[in-house]
Length: 155
Image (cartoon, rainbow, N blue to C red; front, side, top):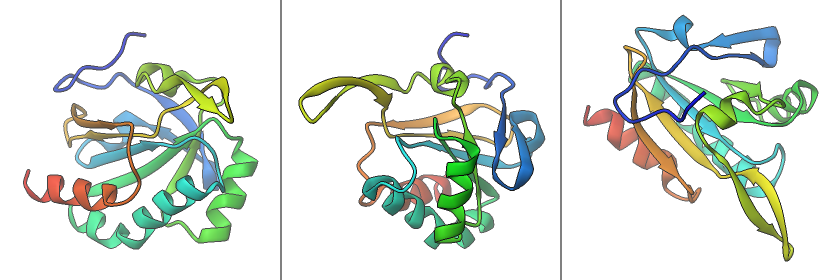
């Protein structure tokens, strides 16, 4: 699969999620989708980012927008993470890096002085017709969710 371009349709994608859900892009035509990729469950930045989405969930719902978090963690890890913080949205497991490769979020990162492959914190906005309309790469957690809300409000 090649990388998705802005204003292009997002190819069908199916991933297993928390609550025994199966996510597919086509199931959400008619709604906006926020898909945020994060490195690892229960780590400080990822927890803060997910809590920001949780705290603003009602605003996203009013903007006809569903939220999904994706990492390479297992469903078991996702279930614990979701339960601990009562996230109202589903977390999707991408252990095989299918979505990670499609959205080109796997990067070489420095971790304690060592080079490792990992997810670059990134968010993608897909419109009601299934087209990618914006992307945020190398996301800094503080203020990111508010920036997304403002973008959606100005659509």
